[in-house]
Image (cartoon, rainbow, N blue to C red):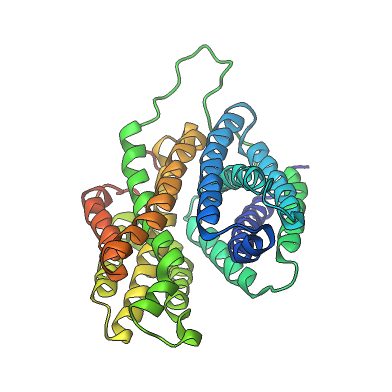
Length: 376
């Protein structure tokens, strides 16, 4: 008996939550991993870069699996890989295996990132209404919860991923939305210009997200001169705004359509980044963190919702390609602000995401189809 659409949506939402919980568990465990394995900060940066490379490869593997077996197989495989990798990373006592294990973790991370969005697109199409906002909100909430778990968090995350893999094999959507490699008929083109435009929006959103998540607390300490117990406040304002934005995204898309909300998101993100460039007074910077959060929080579900309708019959492949922009943004958003901080002041680093958002403005006028069943 096939699972009901409601059960499939719940399973997909749980996969989003598992991914965010596991990623937050891993990032919050990095200082302890550094101390346990004897790495310095430079070595840890190399490890993070290797994990990002692994994630980009994982997205390509998700595309390969989705074409042949569907995104359900890709998502189950990714969850199983992540569960195994987190158990191995949590058990490591030396540095020799840390890089290969985290690259393995990155492989699973990329698989799950891409396949979650593939499944989200199928769920949205089946429901004929926007769903990416609530999926993204579920992920944000799970990431916040993960930061509150202080005991054996990697083992908890591994158990959650393993459970997700087992249940997902039963409840994820088995549909394929990719070209048939056995078919002799010509396939529908992949709309490369559309992929580039939507990918730019994903890039902009994740440049903001990576810059704030990596450097937000350092900014609060070095630029705002907040007391040590208050330095997480800026990032907290950002996360709260991201969650709020994603909770209201679906009804706003249904009411306004994508283009007005996308332009609102870009304006919010630009204003927030400029407020962070100005820095003092502290309240202005905190407002800037919140505005940046609204911008990034809206852009991600808007972009992946649009990606899923570019070429509905090949949405798995489209989403895999769009997802690659996430990892390019992760590297740039993490590295460039540090370089700017070395040259001048960290507050000027937030010019970067503002400029990327300005470059997106012509693109954001394009999404004119609020109905997720409508193709280009």
